[in-house]
Image (cartoon, rainbow, N blue to C red; front, side, top):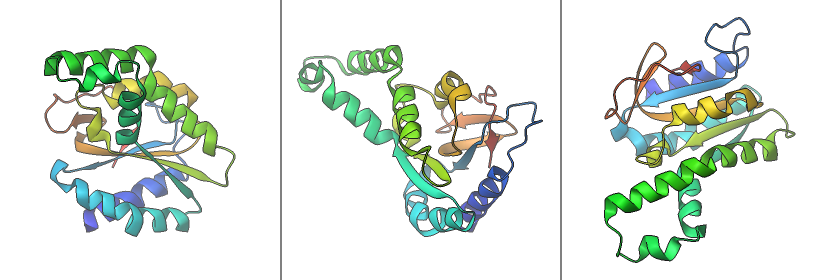
Length: 185
């Protein structure tokens, strides 16, 4: 637990001046990595550690759940009845949802909508949680690259997996991906 609390502290301290001269990018986006099996601990630490620490740094925390985004997409999609009918093979079902989400840039749009909703509030901080729900639909690296130049508010992304330098491995099942410009904690 102390490890994650320290990661939150380090990320928030970094957010105070993310580094305009940073060769990897200057957007205030930080990833706080955590062991996949610690997802429930991270969820509780949002309330008990991250929010109070963010308040200390003057931020107002706004939470965005990838789980909610995916659920809303599936429940509001015109193919909803087909998704739940049981008549589509599981792989085809996941492939179909993945194609629709990616073609519509659905997750990217929802992140930017949330940013637009909070950007005029006092010192907003967007915390993106439930990233594990992206599997098998998308990867956060592709999403970040798509919207990177549109990020206007600080983001902390709670990332299930591990990191080495600027590279990350999502859920510890994908190969290490070094195409991130943001900072790992």
